Length: 93
Image (cartoon, rainbow, N blue to C red; front, side, top):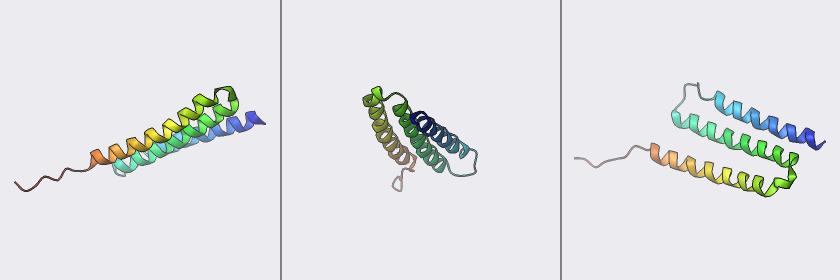
């Protein structure tokens, strides 16, 4: 039964990865594409790590640390990308 849920979480993770990647060829802004890709990638990676946690529970500290860092890293990266994409407004010269 644990194997079933493990593979289910891993499958959900792969579905999120594919879903996030499928948004790239659409005719939208680059920021929208990055946003949808980063959210889908984060959720897919977390689901995959939960599946690994069920498969190899003795590695729970490393997997939990990986999930926490995924959430923090992708959130911070989103803010940095949004900040860098803003056009700099320069005073009238």
